[in-house]
Image (cartoon, rainbow, N blue to C red; front, top):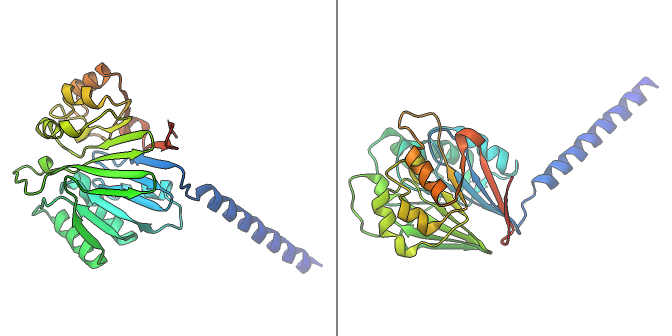
Length: 278
């Protein structure tokens, strides 16, 4: 009799676990009608995940493996493929986390500017990209990617641009999803902002350049893009990021400021008409 009770208890437990698993899958199942933009809390660095259905675009990977924790929370637990990874420029606070991303996920396409670096992090990343045997290309001005309603257009850098500071070659991506527009700016400075001014338009969401450095997010730039929300990816640092100058400029154009060091990962959802924070 006792063995029969134990058998039924095991069956009930198994059924309960199966039901829980089904609920988790249903809860995490990607919605092709909604865009998700996650500005990951990776400390003093940058990493953003743009998702639409089964399509995932990861822009930068932060300074360490904190990006893995973010991906674990915002991606379905069974999804181990990232369709596209973009490295805006080869500095440690943007690229180091990508090394473990390539080791943990199947990356189908890797895009970057032509900027290179002699650092150990860049060499290690180049090696894992080579081992992954994924499609590799340059992300240059004029390149575009379209997935359903989602369109991504590269505004910067230009082909053949030569610089000494790799920040000046940061990839700048304009995204649109229905009536939602967003701008990812890497670490560009005021000079690059002026060079892409003709390509800019008002956006709902701005990833504030260079963690809120005073040398970026100029007044004329912000008055052109007029962001409703300015997201600053930042952590504890000795640079003074975000600076009071940039916070003041954002306030002057009526932009709500969200900071990963205060809010944690910032998650924005849109159905193409409306958008909201989650």
